Length: 105
Image (cartoon, rainbow, N blue to C red; front, side):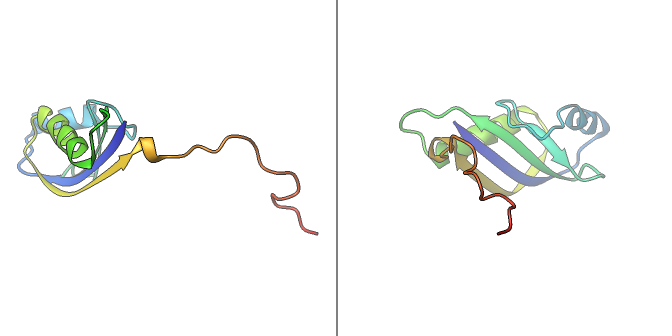
């Protein structure tokens, strides 16, 4: 699984497009993608979750996220793309060791 963040700006977003962006607002990563945006709905961050095949890399993930962004149908300009391969994320199990958190000698 990849998590892709696309930062960009809308180009000529009409009132109907603005309403669709507001309806797709959120901070979670989904396969359809969610938007966060500035108050004027000009600049945006698009968060998208892209399934990973065994041979897929960051380029494939970025292309998948751009396709999801394109599916929303809004005119845009991409400023920056960030890709995180969730297969590389290590999750530590277990709690804190006793005596380490916030205790003074």
